Image 1: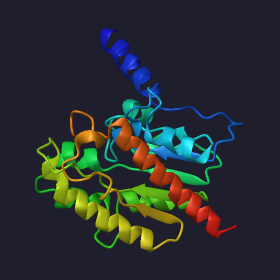
Image 2: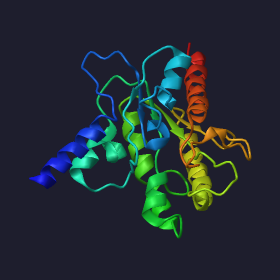
Image 3: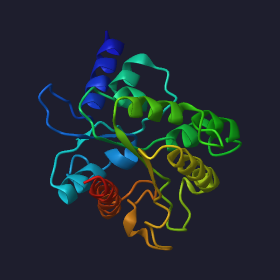
Length: 231
């Protein structure tokens, strides 16, 4: 009984990290991913909050701290730890998507990760879990913004060893975006000035409120610029 109650509480906690969507919800922007999006959600300083402020419209944020693409446990996966299961049906014009960092960092410790990266996305950007998921989103009519790897400020951090894998993921997602005008790769390579720790929290892994705001402004600009071209 104690185990069952623990699982139930855990799922309730995860569910509280994602926004629900009602049948009459007017929002047209959905965000999914891991802690890069989810951090600062409770304080109103997340990436999605910055997008809302920049565009003046609601964003439904389903991201969850620690979420991965490769996640096998069914209950917590359905609660959002599996990024693909964060999706909910809706009239989404845009899907803002990040992920893959936890699959690399927790899955192979950023060492000998070639196979894991290949499973996420192939060198040509055409095959793998990420292209497959993006294809599903495009078939539903959504444009997709793929967020790139957030660089550290050039100082020692727990994920400094993941830099090469992050760079390679960026290259591959950029190639994926080149295959479809409805897929937009947003590089975050120049967000953090060298030596500037203010764009990260103290763990030097997650963006600070300042970092999240900057990412959100860039996401909003992609949406604004793209929609201006179609008017």
